[in-house]
Image (cartoon, rainbow, N blue to C red):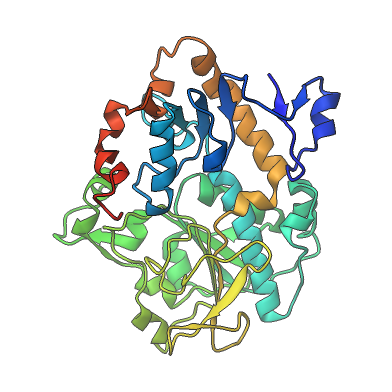
Length: 368
């Protein structure tokens, strides 16, 4: 095992050297190359096995050239997003860290919006421990915080809120009770969507038939101050809000930390992804256009789409641990449970059977 030299990695070259791991300029003699984000196309080495997030399996137009080159160079591509167990649960992901940082950024936005406290940006902290220490002096006035979703991202958000000892309440209480203290509520799909035919909600049915549902999120817009959007959303699902909802006299939301960061739907105020350096912007409900982040007339939006990058040391260590424990035994030994097989998009210049549907995408017959 070797590590390629890098001047921008959060773990410095000398940290690897101190662990006895060779640090080298070139990696062409390696058989398996492990990264995180998409590899720069000119640097792809023919005939190798790569592990990274390729962002191609959903036919993303901006990465068509990447997948074409992978096939041309007869590269075996294993995509982290499709490394799953036999129950199709993902084995490695950064979702928890997106939730952790996204919730922190939501609190940063709230403090700035209300002019009550200032938090040091997460990316200026050495690690999560230092980031959470910033919350120690924070005292929130009565505020209702809503978290959407129930997966790794949502529970990561709850981790960040834990040091504040905020009371967690049920959706029913959240919608009907006025509190004299800050509270947080986490909601699942059955709280913000219902079947069009009136039948009982089924999570499996919702995932399989999202177009058969309508939104029931509107009541939450009347009582929520700060939204931390941590849900998974299917484009066929009902939207959470419409632009018209923002114009309603009883619309109460002041800050939306959109960790999920789906542009314009299901949350119309997410006009674009923001950046780590400039994470906040405003959404004017009347014009539907971007404005000043903390103008009282606007909804404050946080929509950074690479949140784990703000705590790279923690996120990388956690991701590496998952790889070592859950993936490497199958990658370097016998893949008895099909973990590697399910995540292999290409092999020897061809798409594998599960990803054969990408053929028209590779050939340019579809736009998305």
